[in-house]
Amino acid sequence: MVSMPTGRQNRFVNQNLPRSVIVIAGLHLLAALLFGALAHIDSSNQFPDLVVNDDSNFAVGLYANRNIGVGLGLLVALLLQSRMAVFGLMGARFITDVADLVMAFTQVESAGEVVGQLIFFGVLLLSELYVLRTLFRREAGHNTQEITS
Image (cartoon, rainbow, N blue to C red; front, top):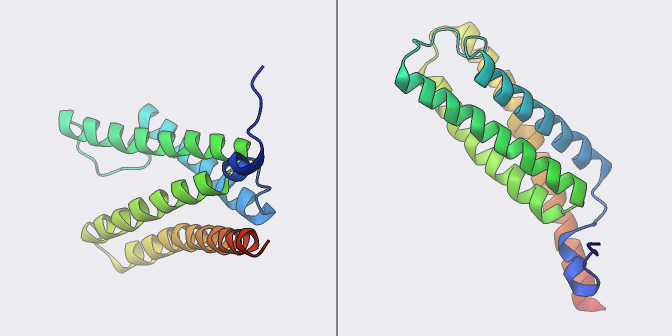
């Protein structure tokens, strides 16, 4: 039987994540797994103008695997209730979404696409920033309580 860490080691697991963080991270988890699986099944839904060849199949596979990896990582982090793991994964997600936003704007051809991209990435990035800010503040408060007690 595996036992949970006790005492000071417990800093990494079972930290009672705020409900808002669980909901947002859970939605990101579901979206990552869904988009990753759909990209593996049929990439034309997410990339309608994609010319299918070996290079594009490789790039879509990387995109799909990245999403599935983050989704599974978030699943483990949420099951462990680990603030640090959720923070790290949402931080990585934020960085990759900013990079995706930059790449998406290089491919935009109309004003309607710009608005759609801004809404899509705006929701993603703002929700990720909210989780990062919430967890950072909670961790900072936790560390000051340890120091003063």
